[in-house]
Image (cartoon, helix red, strand yellow):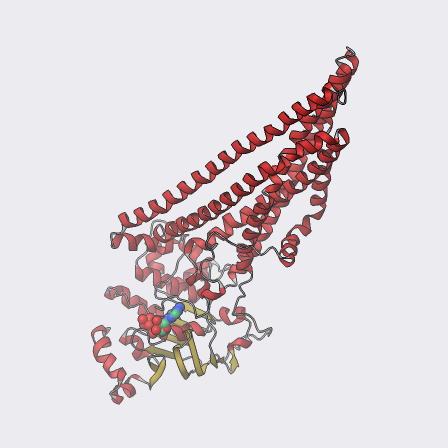
Length: 609
Ligand SMILES: Nc1ncnc2c1ncn2[C@@H]1O[C@H](COP(=O)(O)OP(=O)(O)OP(=O)(O)O)[C@@H](O)[C@H]1O
């Protein structure tokens, strides 16, 4: 089978791994980018406006308790006014409770908005990835798609909850508090603000360190996912066991795991030191206020309540300043997250409908290759000017040494790849003029390694035709000579086949996949005959199943068995991406060329009796 590697230029297009580079990423915070992000919020603009309104309201409400304290100290207590004291305490309690209730509502709205954005993005991403070409999935590391679909997109919800909401709320709190501070006492306000640079510097520094650590952690997580996917899936597991790589794989997993654990500990520790510094610096401000405020009190310029209320408000001022300092880092982080997601969205599916609505004419589905050239990688042609016709209702066999281009020919017909030059026609029409759906719905593909998903046999069969009746399923399985085997299983058609159909034998799997294509009943069949040697009985049934499948269909078969070749109406012999001989078995034997050589070396021993 073909090595699954993409054509040249693909990795440059970002089909490979896309992680942040060297710790100095430059997220693209352009206006275009911000508008693009903003568009995701558009459907939820009403909720967003409501959140903003609540934030404004709570920031104003938050100013009141310190002012109430000031009046308690300056008026209620010195005047021994019990009634005023109770009113002020109740008012303070009332504002706190109201703020709390508004906070609950705001939290609900936050989750509503962010979760819905995540929901929209996941759907959009799934649809988009479905349209990506085969080489995308061949190139991309296994865990990468899952990481983008899950953790990256889910990370977006934090963007709204932390960044947008925090930014707006901090802004409101900052503006309302600083205005109030200045109105209360401008001299003290200036003094309180003098210390601000002291904590801006460490905050920025810590923010940057945490950002880098977070990025490195994310990379390690992606690597971990990749190892898990590669080694703990059926094929990877088998490979690992058979090459006794268990210890090596475990040790690479352990290394990556240890790395990410170390990074996460460092990340959280970076936060601790930062908090300690911040608390130290934020406590300097109030000390200064007590000192200078005390002096002003002695001078008779301010009341005791004024000083207490001021300090309470000052703390309210410091916390948003601290958070706003990190804003740049947070925005950078969020934009980078969006960038990673947009990077996927920006990859254009290369194989698209040409806008035509033509369907295949099922009455004369002959396949014609005209001077087809194709290369996976620039300068390494996989097919060179291949021309042939597979007449309607006949079987064309492809033979040739490994790497000659047989699989490539079969991949081009359902447009898993698009050719570089020349054309492929079905019934005289270029395949690019059919809709992809019509093209693919008329082609049945039986690969060597028949892929069955982990479900019951029946579910696997219904994948070809979801509305097939039980009788249709049985008919298809009988024609594929597998029905009798299926009914012998204890659960019959409800037998679960395991991941990739591992619980079935190779011969059973192939006959089930033949039954699946029979159920689809396509006009054209492409088959990569299994090379694996099967026992004579199994092989006998597969031959019979193939006969049923290919009967009266236009088929192209990568043939590995003499019996198949002998049954073919035409044989194409390929070498280095070109057809070098063409004809029937006898005709080709007479030519004494590559076919004869292959026949002597390869097929002779596989004569099927
Ligand atoms: N996805 C891919 N990316 C890059 N090169 C590829 C890819 N698939 C196949 N090739 C190369 O293209 C050439 C033709 O491969 P192809 O799979 O068509 O050969 P084949 O005749 O089917 O071989 P085999 O009988 O071994 O399956 C080979 O040189 C192969 O290495």
